[in-house]
Image 1 (cartoon, one colour):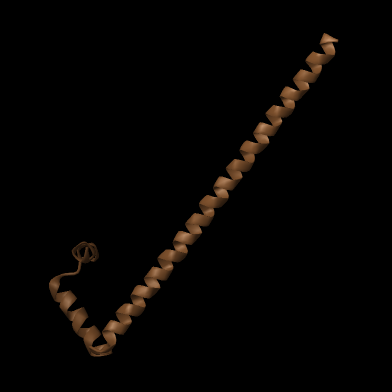
Image 2 (image 1 turned 30 degrees about the vertical axis):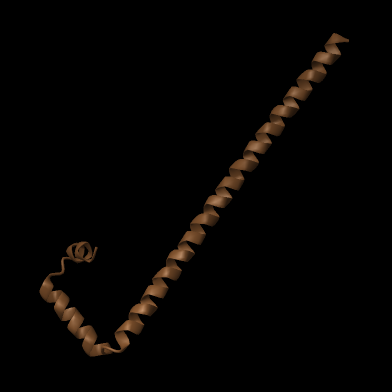
Length: 92
């Protein structure tokens, strides 16, 4: 996966080594695991939030379609009832 990312960004081995060296100089070896943990938590929270938004959108879409189906069924039922009433009046 990291190879695909590096190929996508067009970063070679020399650039990768330079970036890792710069990060080590800036943050130190003790701080890197904490940064990685924080980054992982942030990414996980973002994914959870986006999944929640997707779920809410799908739930709303499904409830709207269910309401539309109920309205159609009620309208069909009214039409059938009116037809039956008209048939009963003509039969009398």
